[in-house]
Image 1: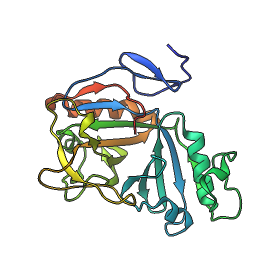
Image 2 (image 1 turned 135 degrees about the vertical axis):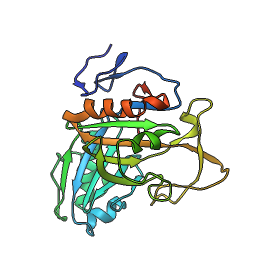
Image 3 (image 1 turned 90 degrees about the horizontal axis):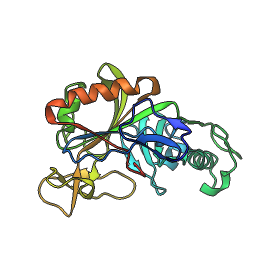
Length: 255
């Protein structure tokens, strides 16, 4: 096993190491799974809701979409964003965000630290949250029914479609929730999928009725303070017990 330099607050089953993180190496074939995704690189951004940074990120409050580099950009509040990228990429992610805040090309700020904005640009706060937050992914046709037991938000396609992001109480804990449906290819045989139609890169895909060329499996990312990670993981497992939820391991790149 490779050297462990970081651990999630969630206890791993069948532990292995990915990018220095001790994670679960378990591979579940259940139709409903919960996986710890805490090793993901995480960056928080605060800037003017109508400023240069907001325009560069291109994702408004309440939505989530992937940028050109593959990071998931989440509009978690007015003038507030969370970005998720593969494990180990937090330094590059923060440097790229600093370049955006300064109005520079993405490669211009490789030497910048978190919170630094080289050159003349608007005021923006960029924080590396990788080791300060816990993230988990709930995937399967019954994921909405599971969350509905511990969260009061309407999780129907009409109100919270694929690409929706919101902050709410989940098991009495303040949690950021992102609906981030996964490709059907990642589902196990027999998993229930729904059809979606792609949208331009500036926005997330939306579910549609009827058969389509691209199948998707309903999936939610849940993000909370690190110290509550194990509690939230256990609470979601308990909520999904009647639907046969099982713990799955981290599958790189994870986002």
